Image (cartoon, rainbow, N blue to C red; front, side, top):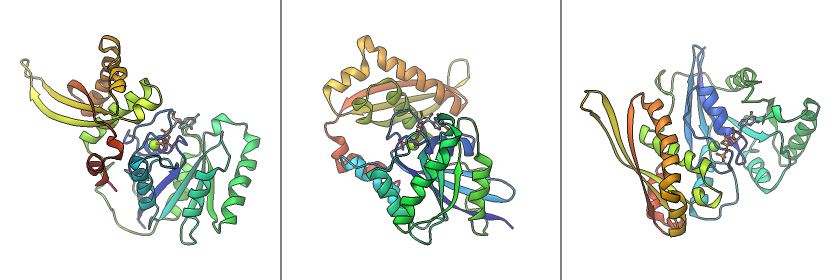
Length: 304
Ligand SMILES: Nc1nc2c(ncn2[C@@H]2O[C@H](COP(=O)(O)OP(=O)(O)OP(=O)(O)O)[C@@H](O)[C@H]2O)c(=O)[nH]1
Ligand SMILES: [Mg+2]
């Protein structure tokens, strides 16, 4: 009997949702960084084997929105928890406190029809003896809002610990059904979007808090050609849009050093993805308050 269905991964920022989806898919479909609020929109990761097809939906970390961008991110989460077969609620084992965001998530997924799996990630960071306490904390709150975890799976994506158990638990709750996507498909994100995300990842990794969270990346040109030696090469031109003149200076850096660093790191990843040489040009532009501007958000909005 072949099983297939949709599985949404929800949780607070930085729990390791995107890292898990990438690991299960075996390909980096979503960027991951040590900074919270890395993922901005829902991304599908598709895993197919002889017995099942799991369509995982990676979502932005749940937080209290500060602008339209944040509201848009939370709308993505809301849309992804409706009518899926399984919800994986991922928590960070090293931060097992129930705050406002944790309460909001658990209240939203506590519906009786939901098959919710509590997935405790990063167990490599804690002593084994602490897991039971963590389970009790989440179990008690979830029960108090009318929910019940169908399964509880402690994992470490880093150590690849518990991942097979998690997969088995997911498949248990999938309905019988045919392939939803082609068996070779692994994601719904386009090459252009992956390029934009890779550049955002390098910006998040190299710049301090406020600056990279205020940027948006747009691929302007994406063209394959043959060079003089008849080898294929991609010409890619990209705009990095930031909110303030002062941010533009920081992104470019002294004598262009920061932009060069971001560009070099991104080019290596893009070349690996496209399996071809890449000529990458980055431009930095200022558009004040783009995060609150409906027009600029329109483009990403279509992904809900
Ligand atoms: N120690 C440890 N760190 C992990 C593990 N899994 C993920 N991480 C790290 O946790 C950080 C956050 O990972 P992400 O996958 O970006 O987290 P996320 O939940 O997608 O975050 P948002 O997109 O902001 O919601 C990264 O630095 C990961 O490398 C794990 O099993 N153990
Ligand atoms: Mg993420």
